[in-house]
Length: 209
Image 1 (tube, rainbow, N blue to C red):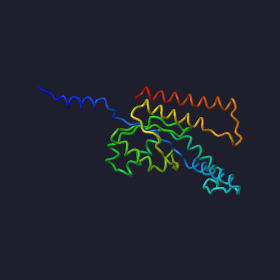
Image 2: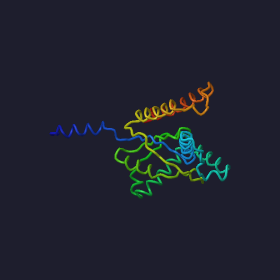
Image 3: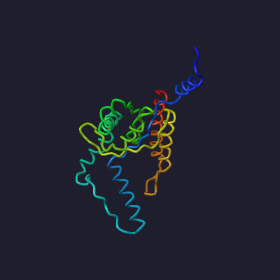
Image 4: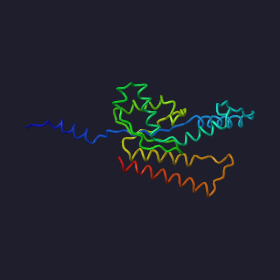
């Protein structure tokens, strides 16, 4: 039996080639976006010397609804992200796209609003586009408006873990204390605890893939 050498080389190449993709996704909910816009407006008006104009917001009418929205955002978990993403795939690619797309939400951190989503190599552009079209996440009976942005795409769990850790370190060193916030020992300990908890979650992802 004669076997082509080229066929064997292509077979070995396909066996070692990475078959999965890991998407590091940032989720920004409506209160986060409005707060960012207000911060930008404050910086712009202070530099120009004009009066600060408050942005119109639906949450201004009721402080109770605002508190309930924040509580609902804090209760969002990986299952909610998965279900909302599946609905987005169904709306954009139909039943065939939903059945042929393998999606797993390996991690979602509600404090950092970061998620690591695992999918196959050939379907990751489809999943990434559906994340762009995702406009809301259902948490219980609530529908929370959201904007999802893909920060990085990795070929292994280890590189996805490193990308998430680099993003957290970038935010850690980019904190602005010019507004009067003091970097006290208590705040430093709290931040270090959050980073340690996130690192433990990322270690589980690295060992589980």
